[in-house]
Image (cartoon, rainbow over all chains, first blue to last red):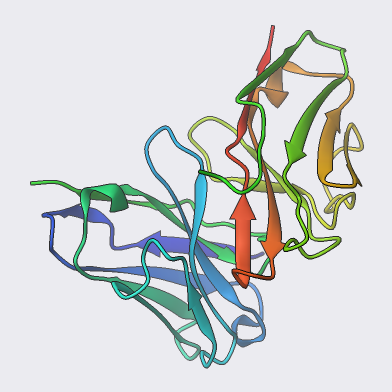
Length: 115
Length: 110
């Protein structure tokens, strides 16, 4: 069965960096775009970034563009989100999801940016 | 501010039929890409409806989606207590070349 497991969240100071990971299993990973979506505490869902199956095509929301880099390792069936220059407003649960329409989601990992 | 607009709350009694709207579907939104997600308290979102009105396997037929013009709706018939959740619409925006979400609707079963 399809499984997505995020990791790497934690408490980071403003201006700091962090890398989130998402490990996939149960499907042909390289065939699918993968996406990061976040949810600030008590708020709605916000798309962050996606990466194509080969890793050659990426896109980012304006709110994170220039501060975030998405990547993937198909051999490890994983995607990553390198986040730099973190701000308080980046505090959220970060979900990875499989290809629009996002038929599978992970359980999420919480990133808190606070001094 | 979300591109797609949903009412912040909705409610119904067990057995009732409720609908949740999603408006603001403009020309940037790719046709037939309107999806709905259910998020139960403390859990990750789950795909409920895709491509306007298609149900993934395992989703009860009590849930249905429709789209007309610049709005879409999620209908839940035979409302049950376990339907109490947050519901989000989403669609593909060709101008952003990415997905956009509605702000979410909290459904309360009275």
